[in-house]
Each structure stands twice: as C-alpha cells, then as structure tokens.
Length: 205
Length: 205
Image (tube, rainbow over all chains, first blue to last red; front, side, top):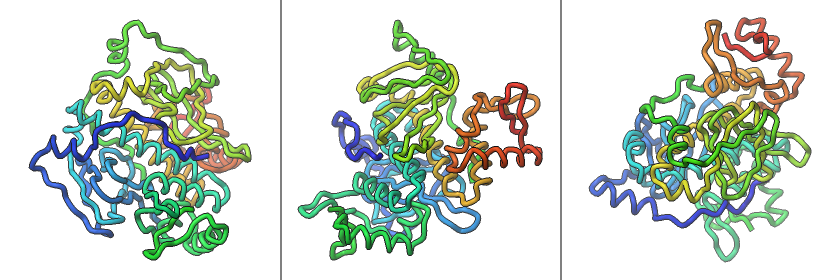
C-alpha cells in the first residue's frame, strides 16, 4: 500500500546550506532529546539535524502522533490547524527559525521548502492510509516501512531506524496499546522481519 | 481540537489567475462529478474549480479518504507515497495540469503553490487528529468542522457544504459504517447542529 520508493525528484541543493547562506549570522537553535520546542503563531521551524515529534493531546489524555519532522522538513503553527499542538525533540536536534512572512515573500525560499513540505504531506497521507488499516499488525508494518523511509540509515545488516522510538510512541502512532506493540514487535522479530541492535534501535532486515 | 479559524496568512494573488497568465493558451481540463482523474507520475493537478476526492483502496475492498482537494489545491502522484491512489471528481471540476519539474524550476510557481500545499498538509493533519478520536460521534463532528472550513459557503442560515457528500463518503473518512453515519447525522440534526437543505446539502447551523 505504501510505495517504499519515493517518487523521483530532481536533485536539489542542500536546504541547510541554502539557509545558512541566506541567513548568515542567524544561529541554529539546539534542543536536547526530550525537550519541548516552543511554538509561536508566525514561526516556521526547519529541522537541520535530528527528528521532532509532532502530536496532539485529546481531552482524555491520549496522545496522537501527527508527524515526524526529519531533516530539512518544516513544521510550526502556521502549517497546522490543530490545537493543542506540540513538538518534542525525539533526538538532539538543531533547528532554524523562519517566519511565515519570510517564506511567503521569498520565491527562492518557498522553492527550497516546497519539496520538504511535500515530504510532510506525503508522510501525513501515508499515516492516514495506515490509520485506516483494520489489522493492528498491518498498521505496525506500514508504520515501520514509513519510518524506514523517513529515518532509516542503510547498514550492512539492514535499515537501522536512526531514532529510538519507545513502544509507547509506536502505540500512539497506530492507535493501540503499548502491550500490543511489544507483542507484535516480538512476532516480527521471530519472523526475521526486524531485530534490535545493541543500542536498542530497530533494524529492519 | 481542530482550530476552526485558520492561521492568518497574508492575502495573495488568486492562483487561478496567476496560472492563466503564466500558461496562456494552456487549457483547463474539465471533469464531471463522479469521473476519475487520470494520474501520471510527473503530473501535478491544480484544482481551479470544484472538489476532488483523494483516496486509497485496501486489499479487503475498503476505501479510505486521504484528502479533499479544493480550490487552488495541488494533488497528484508526485505529492503522494500511496499505492493505489485515486482521484475522483466529487463535483464538476476544472483542473490545470503542471509537471513537477515545472513547479520545481519556477520559484514564482513554487511560491504560489506553497500556501495551497500547506492547506493540504493542514487538512491531512486534521484528518489524522480526527482518526485518533475514540468516539465515532466526535470524529464525525471534527470531520464536519473540517469540511465547513474547506468547502463551506456562508449563507443566512448557516454554513452550507458546497459538495454533497454521501453517508458512505463520510463513513469512509471516519472509519465507520454508513448506517452509523446515518444514525449520528440524525442525532446531530435533532440537536440543532445541522440540517439538510432542499438539495440535500448539509448546512451547519
């Protein structure tokens, strides 16, 4: 269902280099894993390194994953309609802050960010398609394939997910319990579909 | 949960006028309500009039709604990772076809499409947040609020949804049955939350 090869796009300049050229003297802001990223109505953050988890909270206290902003992806309140909306660094991250007005007034900047905004849309759609799968196991497989694409690092043994996601993270993303995720990951491990490496990162085989 | 007022964005030129200026002589393509829009790997469609439903099919035959492309919004295979992916005109529509390369090579075009791509991302995220609501009635209310924002037309009586969505469309969008949607719409009608007008369009009161 999820196409594991992304549609071909022409090679582009590296967004981080572009931003650093454009905004000489504007510093990257660093956040440690687990820190909440402040969100302001006009600010768009660009991820220069690391992964940021975007989520919302329901009145009953459940949390729903809305996206993972990976390298070069934009996120922030101007790009969302959701309230409450929260952004938490899943790994150590470096971010650059731009304003919506800056992006909208600069054709070059819009052009650079365009493809990374597309990546976010593709990811959100893939998560929607995943949410509609009736079987929890299928939702988990689809999520892992999506993560492979987004935060996978090819190694000799398989694709290692660059960020360590807890079973609770995975459970929120697919609308199930932590216990079910633990059981299903065990099953996928037995089937030889994945393994954990020494740092407890998932490696898809 | 869903913020019913979209974040403020500076007024921009009308995308349709912009496209017509830029692509003089390139005709809009018209499709009738119910027609399937052909999708090619390099083509991005821009909706100039009407609403297009984007969806996927699961192996069991269920259909999941992935988005509603409304006026000025872009859609097409370069913007998605999903297979199978289908686009069906929900109303009579006029579309303009661009290629991904054209968009990527033109800063002006990227800049114009940027805000409408943002609208699609916001919508997809709102649908994701909706999918995570445990109560079906809450999912339906959230969907109707989203539709109010996307295809609502203010009238003296309330906001009329510009496109007539069947109970099955609404059911696919929130992962429930047609029968449940019919029952819940009846309840919301009794509560004075909505009514149907003479053309059987939903009016949110």
